[in-house]
Length: 342
Image (cartoon, rainbow, N blue to C red):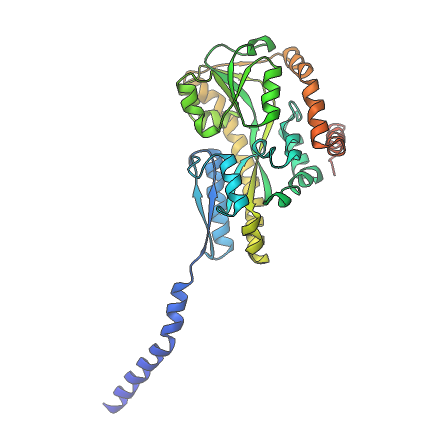
């Protein structure tokens, strides 16, 4: 009897001894990282953010968790960029085009007809030129991790098919809040209207604007087929997304935590590009099935558009710096001549 009592008292003593440690363990909460994005959860962007979140939690043993917030609930790309710079938000993925006001070198990716295909885009974005552009972000309060693919951008509108350069005339076209996009479409003859993506569907629905330009996957996931009749394969710009971290937040992380985010970002890049390309291949048929009228351009009409935009390209080269421009062109020439790039 006395032995049992002594055993019970010893057990209680052990519990009291370890109670503070157990309580402390319960108080340790995972590092929560708010990750904002513009599209909805079912989009290619949403799927990639989910993949990234799973990789971060797995690699950190649950010590780091991503709180994914889509559908522009944390604001437009520009608003989220400002939140990252100020340290009010930790991460986001958004268009490189909306970063031009912060880092002028990002305008390189806005060059009309810069890339002929996705293989060229991958080689340049993931190579020294892409890294050189990304390395300009930290001085502005941002840290770039990887480029994702938005895709080649194409036109939709409610007025008419875009089969030739002259078809742009007079169309009220929403463009990103980016000077290169504004000048490009003004030069093509459109009435270019800068607007946040979060406002776009309503603007199309109310006829505030006639059309917009985005990759097929975004056109589909955003349900623009409900308010647009025509989709035209212009392939005028290859559009990257960029995954970014607030520099204030990044600098407060340990090297191991930074490594977790970077490794997960690289895995998410490979997943996202594969997923986006597979989805894009199916999207045109789905858009047609939902009632959109599809058309492509002849090579001669594409050449006319390129010729019209020569001055735009010269302006981009001057703006981003001739050294960077020439390095990008040299890299593309090497790739097109059969080299693998650096």
